[in-house]
Image (cartoon, rainbow over all chains, first blue to last red; front, side):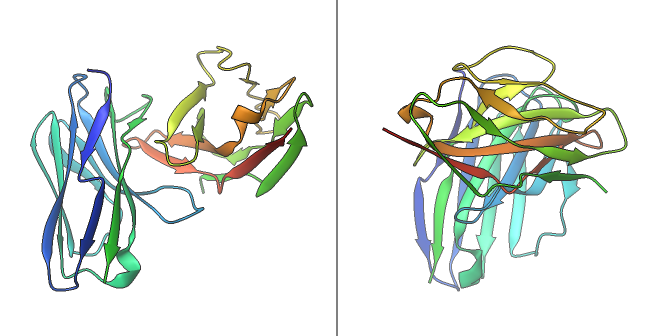
Amino acid sequence: DTEVTQTPKHLVMGMTNKKSLKCEQHMGHRAMYWYKQKAKKPPELMFVYSYEKLSINESVPSRFSPECPNSSLLNLHLHALQPEDSALYLCASSQASSRETQYFGPGTRLLVL
Amino acid sequence: AQRVTQPEKLLSVFKGAPVELKCNYSYSGSPELFWYVQYSRQRLQLLLRHISRESIKGFTADLNKGETSFHLKKPFAQEEDSAMYYCALLYNQGGKLIFGQGTELSVKP
């Protein structure tokens, strides 16, 4: 398996809901990333996990909570989001967190009502 | 500060014409530079990495440290090249990938 997969593809949630995004890779990569991408804008880094430990948090609001249960899985737990959080959420992985090519999943398109 | 600049938001060319998408960077260390492409409703895909020096889909890019540039070129554009192109700089501290604002390439028949 040479791809990063993400579920669900689409998600609609209210501001009081709790939901989770899931990302999976089976390439043996040890670094995983969450990015947020608004329409016609570049991806913006949110979190980096290296060897299952959170290594970078780009000052993301606490309503976004990442989790890395094992080296193949990455979750993003969402709670009490705002409409401005509506975006495409991208997961990526790489062999290590420095000087390695990052490979992206297809994304989860999130709409917060 | 680390920064990637893509000066053109939109580039429109005719099929068969040469195309050059500009990218300039600002980084004090040894840069790791990439070009990613995002076709409509598809995932962000790696197009080129400067150290690999490969030609993917006919695209090439040369790192010019003197001009701090990494422009993407293709001698003959095809309609299927129409997409959003992002230049990105890998910041060595922890793997942070810094993207330019992107250039939308439109290849007309």
